[in-house]
Image (tube, rainbow, N blue to C red; front, side, top):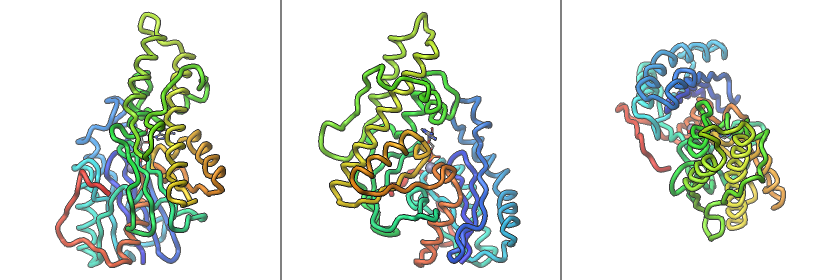
Length: 335
Ligand code: KG4
Ligand code: ZN
């Protein structure tokens, strides 16, 4: 079965072709970062309009690369939530209409299910069950995965998501949007032991997270270090390193706890923050200390992409799910 996947929930237009026998055939990711950079964050209306401009040409490019035409498609999957409503509607309208015109089934995919299953696109895919750490701009969740559609939420952030905390801390330090990668790069030249940052909620049982306090810590440390409102480059790098170490330690402590509590030895990392090198290194050590294994999607499939939606959609379609003719999106949608 050949499935076209469309991802338009936020600021990336992701298109991919997944074949259930041959694997991923082709994919394209177009990032709108440059479009939103001058506003310091995603502008929803601009995002929707840019998806309208880019989606069809990218579908053509993807099909061409695979040497296929729309007539070769057996199904279409699109992200139907959560995300920005206008942006989601672009992919949903396009996917649903194309499926109707071609007479093939279509399916709306939960964006986080896409992230969760992304490591299964790699050659070294994990077997079930596994623990998934989902860390993106909108979510921080620990999920036990026993099979496709068999997900148990073990813990989640009670306030900011990890990526959101990275982005807000970066903004306070005057770093360009998107803040996560910029802050992480700056942290490479910083001293992660200079300031004492807390590891929130690690001193009590449970698998929930809270990152908003770390944001406050960044703000007060900036105020302490700044001279006449200006932060020296080394101070900036040290704050970035201490902040990153606090987030990464906290995530690693909770992952270890989740693996110990469930006895599940396989851990997967998904979502944009999963591209963070320090997080990957530390979780590798965590898994090794428990004689477990850690799996990641390739870095470009950590952030938003069409391949994860094509894959999750193919699994859903094979299991018999299909959308009716109504075009429906769900901007807020618990997994
Ligand atoms: O999964 P994603 O592309 O979009 C959402 O569904 O949110 O994740 C984007 C988030 C942003 O908050 C971004 O700053 C963060 O992932 N991010 C990173 C890194 N790369 C992306 N955070 C820390 N370190 C990185 N290297
Ligand atoms: Zn995402």
